[in-house]
Length: 183
Image (cartoon, rainbow, N blue to C red):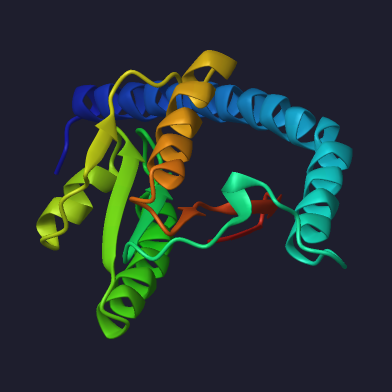
């Protein structure tokens, strides 16, 4: 049986853990509100981009732009965006499941799939499953700046324009609400 002194020490430890847990909860709540606010502000922009993409994909007359011509190199690029850090196992697992679908489809159609990704937790999962990314972007910020995004986009555009790439896709988690995110 524990002595009274041991009980007080344990009680003090439990109180300390409770304070730390409350602090972490407050921090995550503040971060969620910040990200949620940013996400809400970009809704109209996302909708406009989706409309533009639809109009480009379904024109009445063909558009003669070099980025809209078909290539036949047999290569597809996938940019996989997972979590950088933290306790996000299921988050990365959902992204990996969707990536596996793309890998299987590429094998079935005899295409080469090149994986690009920012540095993060998903990198070790890919290595464990025997998938090696073509490029890992180690210098990306948590919220990439315009020059960083432009550098990545220019790389894919150059590959497409030179005929070395047929298509490019992005695998990520789509945020709908705090309780609903889908790959």
